[in-house]
Length: 412
Length: 170
Image 1 (cartoon, helix red, strand yellow):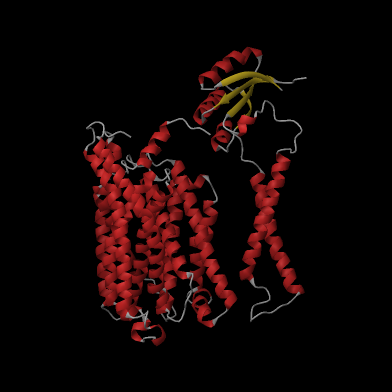
Image 2 (cartoon, helix red, strand yellow):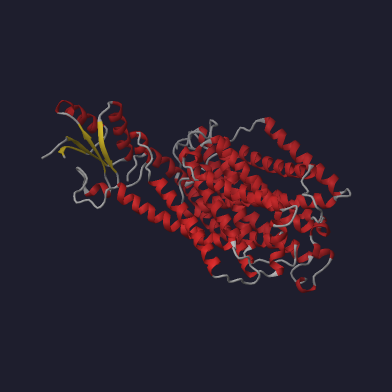
């Protein structure tokens, strides 16, 4: 990597039509949500809003968590993926604002707002829930943005001075300082996300059915977010891997490694689900089992539960067993889409049966458009970010090390 | 009494090894074996080796272990009907655990047996031209060649970055 390497320090060139598609999706989603929320069937609007908020926000934090984990472990293999993963962080301030929209629908979404539960009122009351979850989201977002800021800072500087010869000692010191900040922020972000995403899971999902409780649920929700983030990053990497900018850096071996990580979290997510399910099955306590029975045994949710298990765990598990397929574009794009749809349905089946008491599964135009709206916002956030920053973390010492190691001869 | 003769090349670097193997394959030189201290799939790909049958033996062990443990659980439940807190006689949910353990147990045992049988272990004699450093920090390529080919192959190996090339017979 040299300072004059213009490909490495360039920004992404996003096709105009793609941004137009994202804008249309976001506008259609917003319109559909407003129309549905102000109509007779407003519950459908609010529950699909909550499902999408949880899914897309979890994806954003999960992808940034990947960056933090790369930094903490000192991993070189995934450095070329760092900027793509950081792109998801651009959605987090949007997610923070979207969270406050839920305040308007609190009576529709949270049964304990309509019928306060005296035993749990100290925890489940509107001001306390929105203050603590808002503070948690703000804290996580600020930490994530700080990490991305220090990551991008040195690269922008590097990019600005391209072709101007060797770096001065002062510039090198600045990059080293930015790297030290990232090393400090990364473990803090990992710990914060582990605790606070668990809190979000308890508050925004478990409290929808205030009689049910599971101590493992927070951890399960957190790992689900990480799994979603990794798979979304895998999908994005595959989509850009053949572009002029990424081709020299995203090699089959790195995509294969990302596939192995996705498989590991596929197994871990399945394991956490089973650990929770087995405990509830053995305990056989009515206040615990009713939540599970409603979703896996009762109509209309049972087929959806099996679909989620197949799309999130069984299908990907057997798919990822193959070594060769992990670096092939078409199969990976297909399985990534299947997993992401499966994770969306998983959030759906965690949230909606607690709210929807009719005999049909509420998936229709409203749900599709609200999902498209969040998709558009995520797409706009990522592309806006990637258009403005260097595509690779060129000032990151581990990225430079990766590039130099690649040129050296390998030893056993 | 030696049956074959050829050259043993010792390499320090992986990419030198790959380059040498590719050139040897291009020239249709007989590569007897390659010694490596670590698993490198590229070696199999260059040599055109098919994947080992060991993975299928492992899979067979896993399937037998899983089904065997479930069969054992069914037998145990039929023999001792301990109905606990309204649970069914055949509780499938906890069977996942015994099934998983059975899969792991027999898959490992079958794998080890397959390694021993496929590797024809134990061996009284070391593999031809094997050296201890091939299990530490060096790669070895053993090629068989005639006297007429010898100097040409030696030059190729040395040009590819071999740090040592010597005559061997086995």
